[in-house]
Amino acid sequence: MEKSVMVVGLDDSEHSYYALEWTLEQFFSKSPENSPFKLVIVHAKPSASYAIGLAGPGAADALLHVDIDLKKIAARVLERAKEICTGKSVNDVTLEVMEGDARNVLCEAVEKHHASILVVGSHGYGAIKRASLSSSYWM
Image (cartoon, rainbow, N blue to C red; front, side):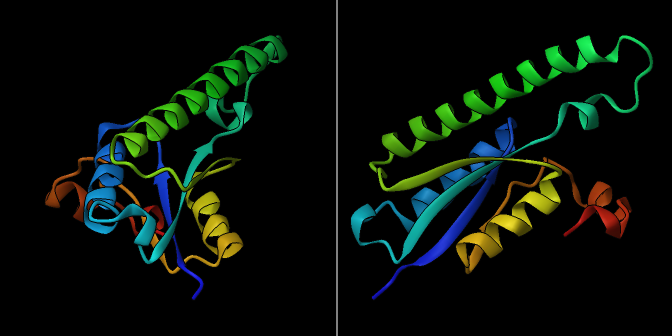
């Protein structure tokens, strides 16, 4: 029987890492090798131009530095995800960095892997903050 795929979206926030830890405890802790899910962890790396917006003259140098920083952040996120998984004895995991807006990247990852579940953190927003956000924020 082929396992269902679970995609976990990670950014560099504690809420995101908490969502990963919770997922591992709920679905993988008893017997990681016998879990009904194949785990795919995806980090959405924004493009440098998106991260700094429109820039004027001299932007090429800034874009290069921003891109280097974004790559370092992505590597740090995946390394921490790997450490969390290893700590929970979950070794059969796919780690990916996809470039783009997180909403689009996560939808693409779900389609690409034919995932049945998508897990994301809460960003730490309370009920009032969540209610006041526009619907365009949510996928």
